[in-house]
Amino acid sequence: MKAFKNWNARSIAMAVDLARQARADGQSVSFAGGGTDLLQLVKDHIPNRPGQGEPDVLVSLKGIDGPSRIEMTTGGGVTIGALATLTAVSESLVVRDRFNAIAEAAAVVATPQIRNVGTVGGNLAQRPWCWYFRNGFPCYKAGGDRCFSAGGENQLHAIFGGGPSYIVHPSDLAPALVAFGATFRIAGSGGERTVSAPDFFVPPRTDAQHENVLADDEVLVGVDVPAPAAGTRSTYHKIMDREAWTHALSSAAVVMQMDGDVCRRASIVLGGVAPIPWRVPEAEALLAGQRVTPELARRVGEVAVTGARPLAKNAYKVPLTRGVVERTVLALASRA
Image (cartoon, rainbow, N blue to C red):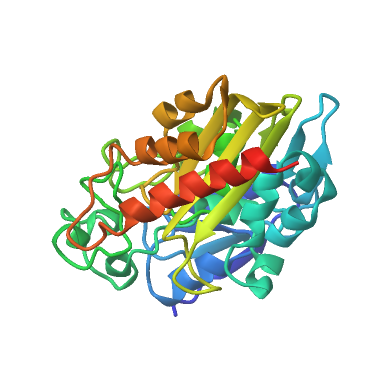
């Protein structure tokens, strides 16, 4: 493993300034929160940021207090610091009471040990887990000019939004945050900016190397989730090939505003099937103003996979995703 310097920041502003200074000196820099994915990348000699080498400097964010907080806002929403651990999110009474899908998503990431250390920011900004990228192949994500999965081993790859790269985004939190209409706060040398959750993630057709909009001198500070409407219910359902330390084969974050047994509005965002959290507005539209029945839930599941374009070895994800959406919508509508 390459030797590197570790600099401890006491504030976000200090972290950004340390990173700026290091880059001015020609050094490669990575920000470190929980560090679970970063450590693996360093061990495997994989850049944490596209276009950079292995880090010469790690700017540790662990000593910064504010971005680890989870607080309810005056308007009934919640602000979640990017350094909050996944365990803290999953156990937060505020999140569980009003934003259950977010808590459920945090609770199924990896293992308890990793959730105790892994952070919200790390889960959202982690790099792909495609076996070609993680094993040193010169693919798009590594700065190359091809996607080896397109004609290779693609059992775990995208059925939506693929090309030229067919990675799937590994975050469990991402679909839930998109479904709730969250906004992300980002800090950098140019100051602080906010982007909507969908706009944070970058599809490969826009930029085949990057997975998000973070510039090299920027760090995710926190997530703001607006107050849910009255009658809102939500859940996150994840299908894995084993019980722990793995990513979704397919998942669905579903948020429904219910009025009795009638769904007034719905948001359905898929995970594990696309390079970005994948929203299915046509399926959502079927639920608007309707009483949710088994037949309607079946139709919603069918429409959710209408645009799927599976590769040679991952067609199983189409019926899997259809079933995930159908079962999740029906179960959530019947929940008291």
